[in-house]
Length: 235
Image (tube, rainbow, N blue to C red):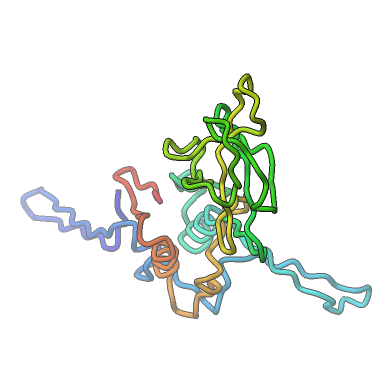
C-alpha cells in the first residue's frame, strides 16, 4: 500500500489509454515529505494537567509522563493521520521493572529457603551463628559461597546452612550478602521515556520519524518500526 502523489491519464488516438501513478511509501506521512512535521516545539513524552482559579488564572501545571506505547500511538495518529486500528505495537509493555539498590552503611544478609527459593529473613549482624551440613557453627559473614539475589532459584554453588545444630533439622538456607550498591529487588513502574535521556521535546520542523528514532536509540536500537504491506504502522 502506498500514497499516490501524482496521477496522469494519457489518451491516445488509437483508443488505448495509459494511466501513470507515482506513489510513496506511507512512511512519507511521518518523515515530513507529506506529513508528520511538528508545527512548534512539542513535548511528546508528557501530558500537562493545568489548574486554574475562579478568575481563570493559571495556578499550577503538572506534567505526567506518558508510556512509550502512548507516545508512539499519539504521535502516529495525531501527526501522521493514521487511525488507531492501523497502529500495531508489539513487545512493549505498559509497565517495566526498576532495580532497587541497597544504600545502607552496613552489610545485610538475606536468608533464602533452599527448597522454596523464598526470602524468609533479614539479618543485619554478620556475627549471627548458623550451622553447616556437619553441624559446625559458622558466622554468616564467613560463609564462603553466598547466593545471588538476581536469580529466582537457589545457586548451585551457594553454601547451605541451618538455624540449629539439631541432626533432625533439615530446613536449610542459603545466604545472600548485600553491600552498599547491591541490587536487592525491583519495583514496577510505568514504561516511560528514560529520564537519563532527558525530555522527549521535539523542535519545530522535526518529524515523528525523528522522535521514533530517539525512542529506538534510548533502547539501544533493539526496536524497529515500519509500514507493512497492508499499510499498517508496526513498532
